[in-house]
Length: 362
Image (cartoon, rainbow, N blue to C red; front, side, top):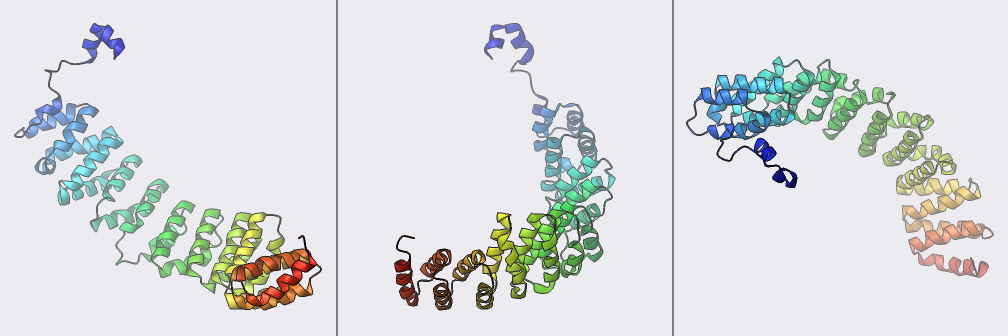
């Protein structure tokens, strides 16, 4: 501004006189359709942003105006202008505007235009939108299907769409993940019929989403497939599978998690420990106590901690007995003391005194 203020000739060239009227100012009440059509055809983008919001529902319903709006939408390919036009047709023209957008969607062949129309139509709560989403989900173009997969909630819930769901669960990883999330939220039977096939998908994000579903369902029917994932080459999938086993609560599979307590990967060690403590409490206590008698000292130390995480005071006498049998091993005694401190069982006090006498410093 300081520069142009010093060069008055440039200032006059770039700033029109205030008396000059903008083309948007011509759009006053009573303006003819011919004047309006001329403005829409000739105005610059900045002026269109001023003109379009002034269009009334009667103007938007006029065939000539709709033809010009269609040209602006299809040929300008300006995202902002498209959003304004689409919003106006839905909000002010209502049923007529919705039908106009539906017709444009059928006529559009350019990828960006079709996706923009789909995004606009998805703003409507009208049941007709369901048909558009179904059509887009079956489109041969992946980008259009991916866009439509964001609007699964717009589908008519009174219809089951079995063939559509089967196709989507064989689509690209991103579309499969969105489909699984939607069907899982609705507890749709089609998902559980197809879930075993999805387990064999090569993409890790799909497998993670399937495991998320199983964690929420806590359904043991798929435990065999989850156990097979423990042999995966992807250690993140292994860790997730271990946690899923704990969420499902299948104690019979707990033995297969114990080797991971010694794995070099700390994420796998954590997953195994967390999963073992999530298993059904009463049965897991019996299981862990049995494993304590068989495992090496370092695994025994971890298992004592897991018994404390279960949080049942009934385990305190067993922990005391086991620690007294291994009183010569300070790590076992230390783990037992940490667990007993969490359980706060009075019967542990004599052992605590004995341990303090045996190891006056440690």
